[in-house]
Picture 1 (cartoon, rainbow over the protein chains, first blue to last red):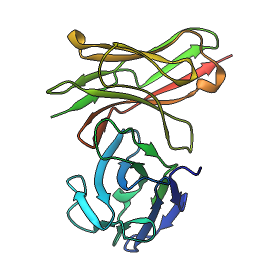
Picture 2 (picture 1 turned 180 degrees about the vertical axis):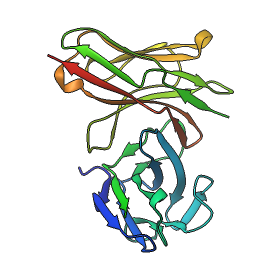
Picture 3 (picture 1 turned 120 degrees about the vertical axis):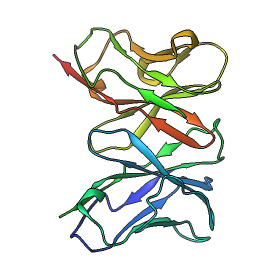
Picture 4 (picture 1 turned 90 degrees about the vertical axis):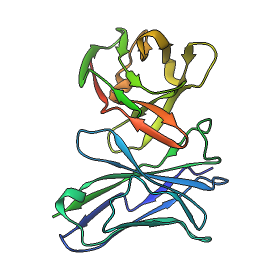
Length: 115
Length: 111
């Protein structure tokens, strides 16, 4: 019974390139959340998606960042024209329900380094 | 607005000694509170959660936490620490589907 799967584990990009982070939720989970952890900080909520729908993207930067969760396949967090400040650990979480009573199950994260 | 404060950035404890990690929260209603642990290079694992009811919550790995509404606190405790408990610990408060995390407390265990 696999948990939340994220890939790649580590990603190095040069400034101006694009970064694509993938997340496959736990089996039976239809709600996906992306969080970002900057160095020496706690995780910050970015976006909440259900299949084919963005429910809340209030934590996403307005430019260069986008997320999707298609009907088939993993959720994708896309960062265009990366800058050094995008270097962080990006965690995906999933839950069977999108409520307070449904604890989030986190993946191991993707550590993005922008050079 | 919700927020979480973990006053201790780093704690060092001897193996076998007790451990207490502090967490204070700000939230407008009855909070949903969580403690997560993150081992190096790993994701977050849920230790325990509080939604309602008994204010003393038991979790995995021998951890417990006590919710004190009057102090807006949700401190994590373990009576006897093992070397494998060395990790970073995050307190979080949830609203709807979002969690707000504290900055974390790094625990070092010395032999």
